[in-house]
Image (cartoon, helix red, strand yellow):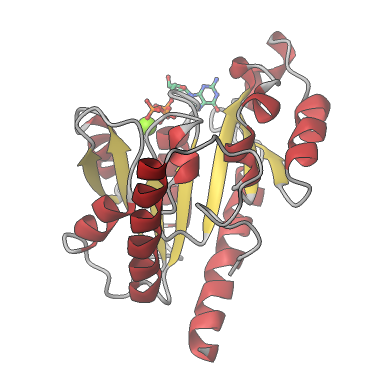
Length: 237
Ligand SMILES: Nc1nc2c(ncn2[C@@H]2O[C@H](COP(=O)(O)OP(=O)(O)OP(=O)(O)O)[C@@H](O)[C@H]2O)c(=O)[nH]1
Ligand SMILES: [Mg+2]
């Protein structure tokens, strides 16, 4: 289990200046995040972040289909409105529960804690949280995850790690998504990797495409390894 990158208050570099009220809110959020970690001791929790439309739900659908035989997976998906993403996941055969944030631009830990009462945790191996599409606000809210994975689509431009550093600073893995479009857009994987590593030298980087399948095996192997590590750490505890 990774503890390298504190998700909320622990790491100030790249964060916005917070007023006292915001700091109190984030402290309360950290408290709830700890309760989630205590409850999900042998479930690997992945917080999937990105701008709107970078391909989070499509990747979750594909991942669920590929790993369904090996892992028991559930998904909590946050959106400001609609159940659309949860419906898409369920159509792909994955257990999914929608969190409608009512216009809020991020998921908070208390939303996850409440949602846990409505999903079957028995035998669960992997819990994905698809965060609200936004590269800014979700970076400050620890959701009790083990790993934060940020997608950056080739169509968004390769300048994002320096513009939104906290998202990349607090992530363990950056997925350059929609890699099938790389030949057609001005996006350099080399540049984005260099910038991302200047923000966070420990960030792992993969390129993926759900359209042509590139990188999906590597991503699924990464997930299986993290699930294994979480189970081992739960046994040792
Ligand atoms: N070319 C290409 N398009 C993709 C890929 N993955 C997803 N898309 C398309 O990108 C659009 C957005 O995908 P979603 O999976 O809904 O994106 P999202 O990040 O879940 O979006 P929000 O939940 O609204 O933030 C859809 O039209 C997908 O078909 C990919 O690998 N390549
Ligand atoms: Mg989505």
